[in-house]
Image (cartoon, rainbow, N blue to C red):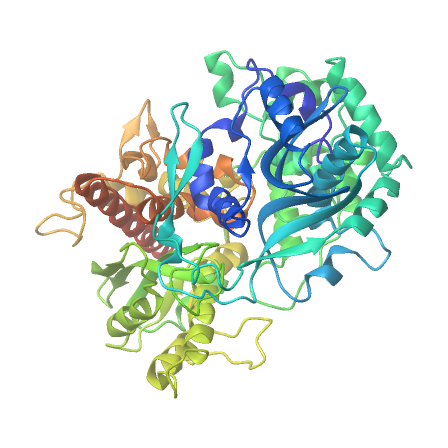
Length: 640
């Protein structure tokens, strides 16, 4: 955390500051799988002893006593040096040698070691926090036990490994302890065969730790002195002067909604102190809001912060020769709208008309829900192999009639449904040659995953017909050896939004969770049509999961986000707050469904709870494809 932003050290332990990443550790653990991975790591060291004490004093005492043995393996060993305290995942003592192992739910392959270091010899940003974490642990351990030789390892998920047995994931069930914290219950049926092929791999990082201590920040301060500086501020309870960076946009202490509940905003404090902002300044769009702009840090350094202060000399636009807006042209459009206080929608009517002219009816709209679990479902499966477990499918025919045509959901524990999923998709899409729509690259990516799965399957030859179907509606990924683009390749609505449509209400976001509620506010056609309870009605729009649903609902003269009309998929947390738990964009966008799927796989629940969760998943996914339909309906009306 301190490496990312040292000022966060001041806010993190203070309850008066809203912290969006403390919403629900159990749900985050479900989605990311870290607790199960740590439990699996312990299984590879069956002689290990867990330090069960939670309080620092007794856990340190127990650790010290056990380390008197000549050889021992400890889980959660408690080590203290002066005011510094760590709990190690795995600590192995063999005479005067201590082996420190930090377990991470991060994947590695045979090429990972070369990726950790950049060409200039410094640590890659994606790995820096991991190396810094274990470097700190080693430093505390070395000072607490100066007469020992210490070696340090990251234990990571080996994506090249193959699961030795079926249903291994089902043997690590996530529960809550009495305090509500996550814990893993390991099944009594876990066997030697289950552990015969290690899915985790140790990576020695001693040399990387030496390197990180000597690395310097942009001020020329090395990591050792940074560490001492951060520690000094933390222990004196002083706030490190804020350095504004592009990462401020994702600050966990950035919140306006929670201030009404009496919580303070760390983000606002930082920006107020650095820029002498008043409350009114926070209503202005800033460089943090500018879509996909790579030079945000440069702008922050020179004080070019509010979009209204940009002029053409500060920004270069470049056409890419394609229809609609290039990336830089869209960025400048966003700036211009702010500068001119222009709140009107921009639509490239001719470009969109030309695109629509290439479509074939009926139009198909599909959305997938997927997961990547670190511990595989079945024998021969790789860790983090993508699993597609749900889709929804809407169609619009030539006359404009809309139908929720089909859906698929398989949440059976311990089953990888991906192949069955594609067969069901083929059955639904194979009835005609209509244009297929997705939103963003997610569906294409997962179909590529499943194609590789089919091609690597033990059956010989693989299901040729299913492989051909996947290729017919997808394009190859950049990493694929074989390059293709199917005759019926899915059209990406996300790309059409970026090219032909811009609404200032979105503040640059192109996420469907932003585009959908804002286009409803713009479209009188949608408001008139869906203000009536026609969705799922006998003579209205057919639905498989809704009855007489009204999607346009006003609250204090504002149209409510249709997603807010659904009960949360996970009753512990609203759907819109799920994204605040994660840094990964994939989990932000589909995290609610991923968590629900993980619940169905890795927790005990009643049949009633399981059925309610399935119903919630079906409704949520159906609304995703209906959102795509409504976006296109609104465009059709805007082009009249």
